[in-house]
Image (cartoon, rainbow, N blue to C red; front, side, top):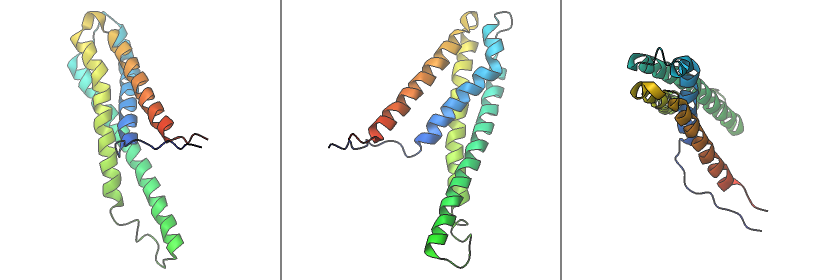
Length: 156
């Protein structure tokens, strides 16, 4: 029976992958009509607005998710330690940690949204290539997740 050891990965891999994925999908959702319409190509202003919207929404969602997860872990630890006052551990650096994780996800979301849209701006005649590149990046992110999950599985 051999156990496969996990290889080292970035500490914030969920934030990185979720941010990129969210940004790409938001960009494709909001700007696909302009990317596929050769009569009205996408411009840099629209690309920046969509990327900013992706960053704000993705960052906020992950902030709330991280905050709730960390808070529940700390409250569980308080119960395990039989502390009399509740919320003491959760009031430590919880907000800053969640904000930092959300900031990473927001930046990745911004970059993920901006990448395909800038391709559409730079190549207005073949702006549909931006969709192909976005799908390729999504497939690459899926491969990264598969490699990470595969390295975490035990072989029995």
